Length: 210
Image (tube, rainbow, N blue to C red):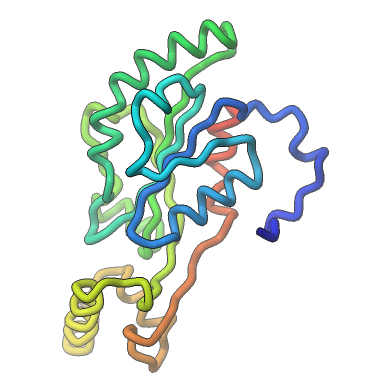
């Protein structure tokens, strides 16, 4: 894959990302795309959410979850909720044994959606349960690809688009984003790509311990 960051080797020297697991979810390839972009920047291992067993990921020094936002909710969050207490217990001990005082354990979450960031956080989609209150949450814009969507999603989009025509003010921010990008074309025929590797900058800082 072409490296959209266009970084030279010197910019990657001395990074502290060895031992980082990146776990991506999603029904389409958008979250995986962000995971692959991370792999271009840092030494990470990628795992699909459905294949990320606790026994495999528990001893990584840093763990990044990349999850999609569907219908105002983070899909796949239950996996992180279920694993988090055990991950922190095991990996903190492991990191200290391997890296000493500098081996702080880091777990982060990147949410991927179609709303502008401020609207995504305002809507409550990024609210995490108490057990995850120490997990930093970041946001990245996603993409809409009707050729990858299932029949249920396409039907829902058609209903929402017609409802927006009747009452534009009541439409959610992410739908307005899609309609504006689609201009005069139906959403059923329009691909909208709002992804950008720049959204990963705070995740890179987290991996590097900055």
